[in-house]
Image (cartoon, rainbow, N blue to C red):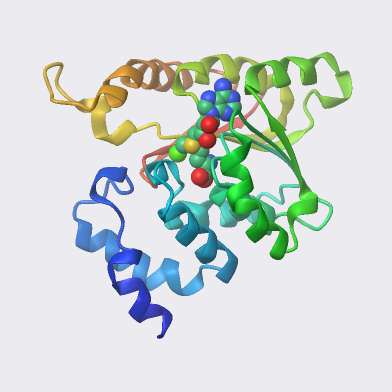
Length: 246
Ligand code: SAM
Ligand code: CA
């Protein structure tokens, strides 16, 4: 079966409840996936995406178009020393690892090792596992430890933040000292399933409602932060790029 045949079947369709697209129609998103994303998706990423699709929490995975975006962005900024907060089965991690040079590094953190290990064989087979330093546990104490080491301050080129939304502002405070001037922090899910503009009585899923205020606070804080330049993109569920300028 050709890849276009398999991808136009159910497997390649984005899920309706997966806030995978904020585009004006599902058909338009599907067009983008089938035209520009799936045909260029590395085999290993496809394999990891298919493994993840069978996992009960697959709603959490990074979409294929966002994976492609991250991979391109990392190459454009020549990232070498990076960090990821929130790994799950590793789709964005693999997109990152593939973009970095052979001696590139990713400090990857997640409270759940089991899901990371689900994707790890694919990452190993792709020959990029040596770039990854996985730490199991909450990310905040790891960041605090890093900050104690003067050499780590201002040392990261890129950070992808995709974990507990209620901590994003706590991460931001620390990450601004860890990323170098000119480096980029990318906060994921900043349009939060479109709920950022939902009226107060809108019927939102419980977790969407719970985290919405944190996302709204983050967006306001980033827009007002003079230490960064920002660019919020409607890729995936919304991703805000912050470039440290001081
Ligand atoms: N970037 C991943 C991908 O491409 O598939 C998706 C990450 S998923 C949306 C969020 C992850 O954050 C979960 O795997 C969860 O275990 C992890 N997480 C939740 N709280 C965390 C914390 N305090 N520190 C580190 N990871 C955390
Ligand atoms: Ca995400």
